[in-house]
Length: 99
Image (cartoon, rainbow, N blue to C red; front, side):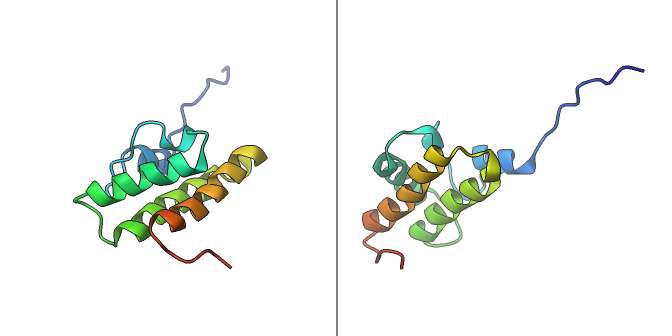
């Protein structure tokens, strides 16, 4: 019996595309600018009626979740941009920089 390619569904993909906490803008994690990623997440968090935490925590949680779930499959350059987006998100919300 030949091996058939199995379609694998990951719950993490569902979360980032259909989050019950935020309605993310299309392609937010594919943007090139850390600042634009942060601004998009901020807009999504501030307009969401379904989030349970404050807008900053919701936006940061979604960004961290995306970085963590991409794991070793995330190219170093992309990870660098997303890590910089965390600092930009803090600036957007007037939060102190990470230590």
